[in-house]
Length: 185
Image (cartoon, helix red, strand yellow):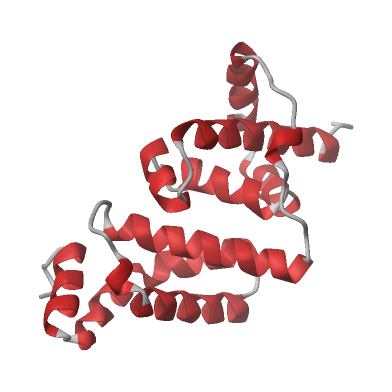
């Protein structure tokens, strides 16, 4: 069973009730999920707690996995959403009203993305710590995890144009934060 695909393992659990094989999925993804949690909370104990909560939630909702996407995409969706919700609760922060941000021309978006990608890693890390969780989530999904627009759509439940707009705005907000933090240099 160790060589089986993630989806085959899920089918086995759902069809035969062999819940112990869920450990294979945990072994495959726990390090990556832990890393994502740690990138959000910056505390190893809290990240471990989140890791266990996420896998428990995943296991409890396994029957909701639709097999339309990869298991890993579904798991990362749970991970991001859980971490963002945790941060929101922790900060008691209002959700971003994406409709309040002004539109920027597409040619300007290319320049913004080039500048954003040119940031040094340590500065980018600080910028990601300073922006709102929703912005961080979008940028990590796209640039750290190399998720396609389609994968992000499946993970968030949002439409293609909404994802593209949020990515665009997230890049702009991250660049604004970068300029705010490092304007004197």
